[in-house]
Image (cartoon, rainbow, N blue to C red):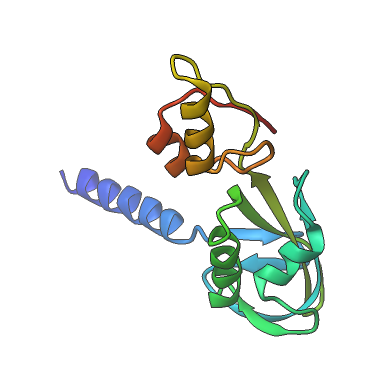
Length: 162
């Protein structure tokens, strides 16, 4: 009986220690970002990928991050940059990755997904005059970004392009 208790305690201790030691890290073996221990970096560069219609320079400006600026990762600066991009209502997904780390300099990539844009719209079952009024009221124009509010308010079929 005593051997079983000792064996169970040993197994429990082994599994408890291995699960406690897991820490999320990103980067190469020689330089990793450890999310359990924030480290200060100097921003060496920013790139943007995944966009088709939006201007890369404007998006970088909207992040509020500046080359040469120092901040901790993980920290509030990256969260604020993501929040600044979300506020524009133009994106459906944002991912930030460190593409390169040289000493204390970090290079970031913002992988963005744009919201769909309106390519065609048509009204059926109403007169041309009513359709014109509705189009003006909803401000429907080709190329406009489709938001959740527009879809919920109109309850019409919209054709989009990505």
